Image (cartoon, rainbow, N blue to C red; front, side, top):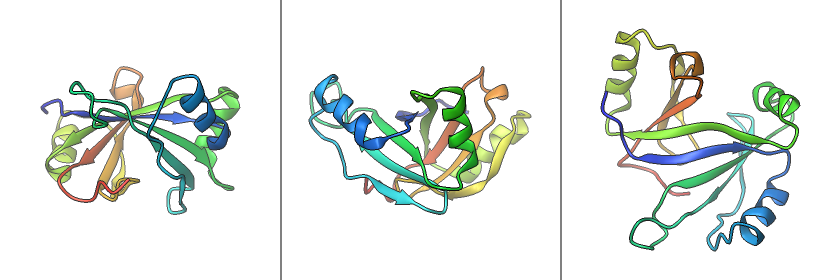
Length: 147
């Protein structure tokens, strides 16, 4: 498995609205996308762009994640971390199915089948116990990326 580009860092938050204020006023973010619901995943998300090495807004994004009613996993995370915090990291791959097969061949626990994520591309997660304690999202690139 080759390490792909770090696409985003997922940050769970009890309030996307409050987190937007933080990233804008404290961290100086200048490009914050409109929040939107992902009901199939039980979350509301909002992407914050960071500058790339060339100064253009093409760096790693911050994905703010707020649970929608009924979302047990993000709600449980926030029960343990009431102020929120880093939830996952996401790496890009060119072929989601090949990546899934490689992780499974290495004995890594893939959590569920590939599904459409917040960028409109296929994703899956790998269990943190198999990834040095970090919940890891793998995302296919090349299509989607509308947010």
